[in-house]
Length: 420
Ligand SMILES: *Cc1c(COP(=O)(O)O)cnc(C)c1O
Image (cartoon, rainbow, N blue to C red):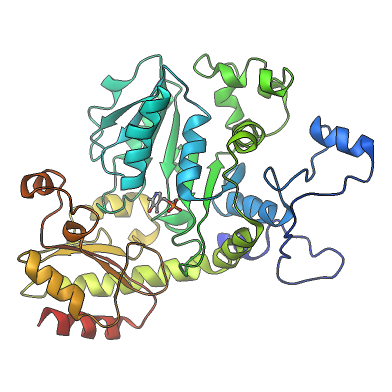
């Protein structure tokens, strides 16, 4: 079946009342009915709800549906995108290990992976993801994951995914791709040999800026890469915290199962059933929205590229963009979402544009149905000096747009007036 159909129907059986909308199971716990059922659920002899920190019927629908839409083997929903990234990495690496992280990733990922995880004894080695020529040299026997974004936020870069996947395969290391910006509609990570995909579902999957949530999706057949792999003893040796359970012996997708049974159980950054429901609503229309966001952004990128006061536009979907070849290679119909950036003369003019637009909200978010404008130099990168901004590739006149679903002509008129 196709993505559009799966996004509307997969994983939900209408049950007794025939409710068309997936019910919200706003409950903490579940009546097992008998001591035997309770014991069987805990012993994994029978899968079923135990306690909402671990699983919930509404969240189950979201999890199986995203796995189907992305053509993965199983998924786990989490409290936020940050929690999803943490779980995916913590499922693989522990004290004394290292992970290799792309240079161009979300700021929150950089701080989590390079600073916070360091305090837990996990070292992050950063590679130049545009070409990934330096990646292989960073690998050693303690390397447990390679992390990158299919379309990076906020840099709007597309890495050399082929090369990253080739290195991960050569050394039997799990590759993790943050697919938040591209979404499974534009980029299918598992078709490119990636092992695990993570999402901030707070962005395009939700689509209306109304809930925080995250997702971890594993590739079909990932068990084969984990079972017997000396890099990952945690899947092959008895887990003391689960009375000697050996994940490799179980007939389930064990990457996700271990996140649920050990990390979500203990750390507890679980999504609420209501937020899971909001993300199901978003998933239903994701395909239509992402295509429309891309169409709108393309028109706006074209307008900006021809404007005399705009020095540079970054939008890989645009034929003239340096990354257009990669967009064509990896992305559906070379569409690259609603994210674009452009550069004007200086700091003051950039601020003037932010203050003059009427339809764009000054917000640090992306993927909302409403258009958003941000000026990194005066917000997210405010603490950096002029030289540091240059190094980070953030020009003082750089403006980032998350193009929404308004009529593109209205957005163009608004930007045109602001540019003067
Ligand atoms: C927003 C974002 C995150 C973090 O997700 P939250 O849901 O805000 O925790 C991670 N990666 C990317 C690419 C993002 O845009």
